[in-house]
Every structure is written in structure tokens, then in C-alpha cells.
Length: 124
Image (cartoon, rainbow, N blue to C red; front, side):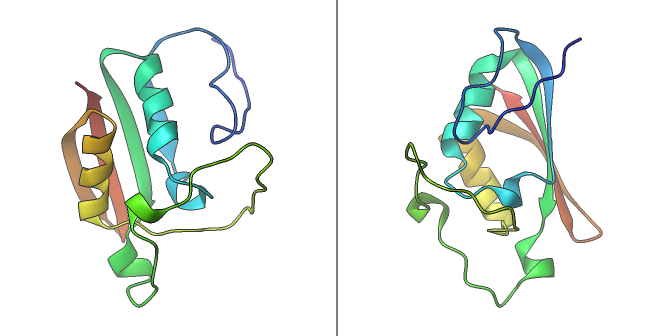
């Protein structure tokens, strides 16, 4: 097994390996740009039937009054764009379903636990 570090919003996923499982825990809310391209990159690298496991703060619990941009109105990364390490957007249950559909995943399960969304996406 090998470990690599990259900026998944700006770079390709390192190597050529295909994966059975990708853990995406406490990452989604820190993304500066639309997550659709990143989820598509992950989808391409998963084996057929592979799993993407996600945990992220639930918008309704952590920031119900905060106005976040709609998923489809979020900007896409452009070469040279900067990054800010902060919680940029909180997601709703509906948005995770929309994100799964937009990136060709099936939601195997989606649960709430202590204010966090725990999602299991399967590659279609």
C-alpha cells in the first residue's frame, strides 16, 4: 500500500491504482470549489461496485441560518485559483443525493449521527 498527498480539487489523483473503497471524511465541507469534478475523479478510480464513504457536518445542525450557495451554482476550479483552509459549505441531505446523481453514484445509505451526515455511495 502506498500513501500520496495531493490537492484533489486542482490535481489528478496520484498513481494509476483502482480502489475498492475511498474514505472522504471531514473533507467535503472544506472544498473551495464545486465537488462534482472531484467526485467524478473518485468515481473513475473506483473498481466496479466500489464504495465512497463520506462524513460531513449536516447543514441543518451546524449552520441552519447560514446561506450556502446551491451545489450547481458553486464555482468550478480554474488553474491558478487559490485555496482557503476553512469550512466553506455545509451540505443538506438533499444535496448529497443530488451530488450522488450528478456523479453516477448510488446512495447505499445515508444516516445522521451527532449532527453529521454519514453517506455510503456505491459506484453504479
